[in-house]
Length: 186
Image 1: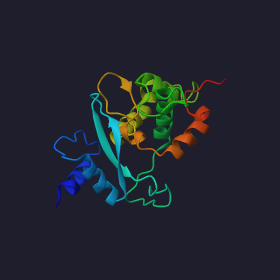
Image 2 (image 1 turned 180 degrees about the vertical axis):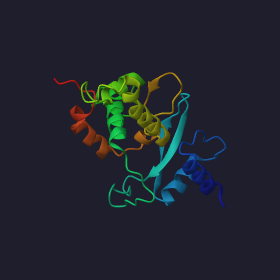
Image 3 (image 1 turned 90 degrees about the vertical axis):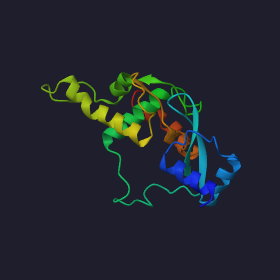
Image 4 (image 1 turned 120 degrees about the vertical axis):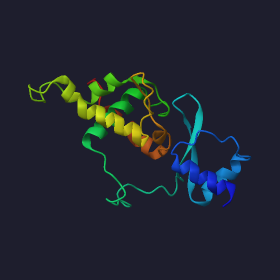
């Protein structure tokens, strides 16, 4: 196996490829990615360093729903979608700016924006139990790469998969920005 193909496979398997050290020519890796209709997307690592992720090339990215296979794809839960929407809104306070990497916000702010308004949960359910599904969704979004890994400081950042979103999808988010959780009525 040639070195570029091996490094590309390694980058895909590790989700975030932290180092291109040892790769004599980054162009070689980019060419290997292009040959299989992929692209390298630069991302910021949790430690502040730089890395890349391997994603579909923009012109061949599968459209959600067309390539759906229940055995290989897992649908996001409504709770995960709410938490992701809240994180997007809070980490991206100005939709006219670039989405990624966004700003760091507290977990509590994200959970407060995603959780249902007062009065929607039964009175006998305490605050810790009310927040449990939202905390779980936060952990899952971090595991999937939509949010950055937990550094143990209680902060949330957008993850490397968000860096790979197509500009057309980000434009759609801009159009629906005021519908994202956490936006106060104006």
